[in-house]
Image 1 (cartoon, one colour):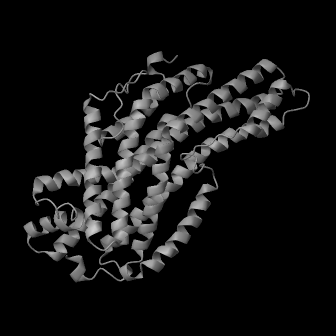
Image 2 (cartoon, rainbow, N blue to C red; image 1 turned 45 degrees about the vertical axis):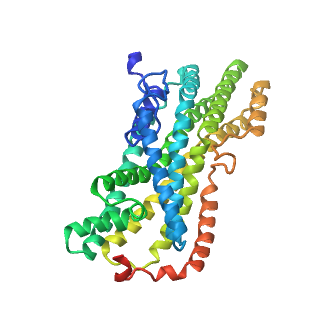
Image 3 (cartoon, rainbow, N blue to C red; image 1 turned 30 degrees about the vertical axis):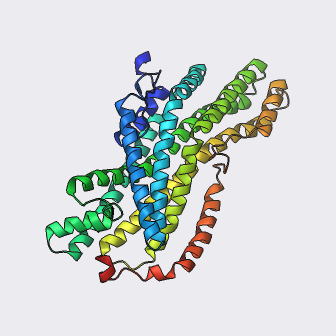
Length: 399
């Protein structure tokens, strides 16, 4: 028999997800190891989150100043969108952290009400594998990105000191050192902010995936019970009423969770779509060495795979919520009762799905819609930015 303290719960399952964000200054929730979690403005984690937000805002303001004083191109727009989205990510996770104690308490009450189902098997392991895979890929991509810049700096300058200055002052933080004096300590601080920003988008996608998986796995448990009751031709109305109550609990929980994280879903999709456009556009530019080619294609594949996985995991919630309808419609006429009829009408009239502030629902077909939109806008992007495709000569690479 499993000791109560060792039983898996939703707070234990999500602990690693919250800790991952807090390592890079996001999601400042306190007491994450306990069922009753807290939030406080007067905490180191909140201070660290404000530090992360300050970095994104500083980078955004300096990039906007640079854009206004020079010719606005696709690269400038790309950086502005990235810094603006990064600032928004930091803000929405602070906002979610304020609501999280109440949200996780509501989630915990649903878990207690469904204790008879047990915690979803293999869910904790699946989440751990997903986090390890995407964080490992993120580190590979980030290292490749920095290596391409290091190689370019060494290509342009033989002297080490000049190469380091070119790396920070021209390639990574050119918009920063137009307004403040160049020095190594400042460069390292801004480089760390830049790293946090790159991580923010991967973390947002992982967050949406994990939350969706947790909700879908619970839906799957109820669906299995409904399937079993249908196959065994259970006529007891009380059993069907309890199944409907369990489904309604989850329906309410999904609505509550979606209401709280819909901003995160929105900021997961929009920057990814824009970055895919610019990444595909960048692959059309000539590459100067094999490392640049490897980085661009690894980065693009990683970005596309993240976006697809967010769609798949998010759509699982909708798919699992619709499956009971099939089993309810196929019950034998001898066991059909009022509770089954109410259950069917409930499923027909109310559809569950994750969404981004009601601008879009995450369903299976959203992948095809995204692909069509990306192809269309990519053609427009190429048409209006033909001149930049031929840029990148030695003279421009070293300025």
